[in-house]
Image (cartoon, rainbow, N blue to C red; front, side):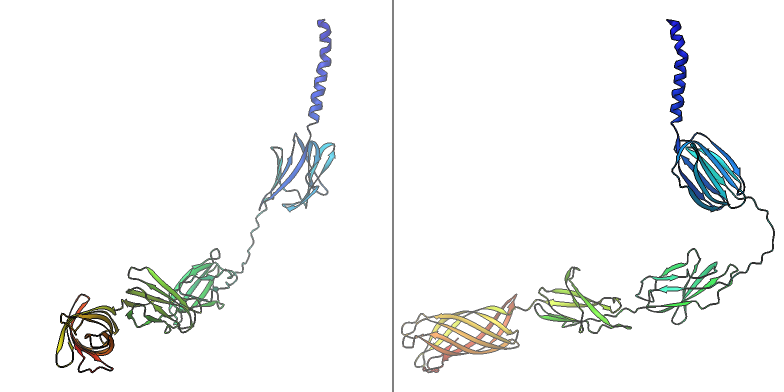
Length: 469
């Protein structure tokens, strides 16, 4: 039994070897791609395979070629021809030489340059380089070309402190450049050195006017350029704001005119004025923009206080002026309406020469039409007497105008009264006149002394039926 098993062993071993050989033979790769890298003095070619075992390399002549055979390769995915034209290599061809052998051929332009082949992961690396040439010393006369200067300035017009860009990149045959800046009077403002690697410069001007840029380019022998190389820019003059108020002090609810029509622009025209009002704490109260001449704003202040008004002008190039300032004082209007309280003794004339005495009182309102000059008074009241019939208490109402001259005043008006005697009509009209003087004031209360006379204006006799108070 043991001998029988041993007799089968050689056949089993042969079967295993054949199986391994078959499995190994199935592991064939492909030429995936060819990567070419060109440098100034080298040419690198990478032949990348999906499965790589070994290769052989040889050279052919007529024409000159370098040939590489890659074994255990079943297909080629790389292009069949790649144009190179570098370091003596015209191109690279690929193809299947035989089943399982892929051939890569390097076609030379002339002679085969120095090269080496080395294995890398999943492929080959082929490196070419030029042959060392013998240095032949020759006297070469180098002609140095003159430098040519070129300068550009942008923008050609700008506002104060806007960026101005200087560009000398168009200069030729230069080692360095320089630009100088002059004002209109020829005074040098500033200068800047530039190079071909850094040919641009940014500058700004804080004053309006015309500025000139003069450039120079220098050759490798530091010879300056001779061609005209100039540019210019103009810095716009900002407008000047002027602001007036009329009046600058007035009562609240009265219109105040804010006028910026006098604003000017030295080299253009004002196209807009922005008004702004702030209170004493700096809080914004109101703002207004006027885009047409005349540049004015009629403002009504509703609250008393001191206000700062600013006006900023803008010209037709977008430049803005410094703010113009005025102060406006809005005062609270004087009180014009007051309460009137009159009290005093009144004598009423009856028939004959006798008078009847009364205690009289009156309540009304005073409105100052022209403060301190003209008042209108509407009042009503009555008078009480203790005398017997035919005398009786009465009521009256009146409308007066008082004219003031300093502390003195005089007035006239009309009124209506009920009868102060039983023999008189129940009510009748009266003419009233008074004269008086303001004595003193305490806070908002004024004390005055007056004398007033009233009498009928129709059927009754004024002489026989007047009243004195």
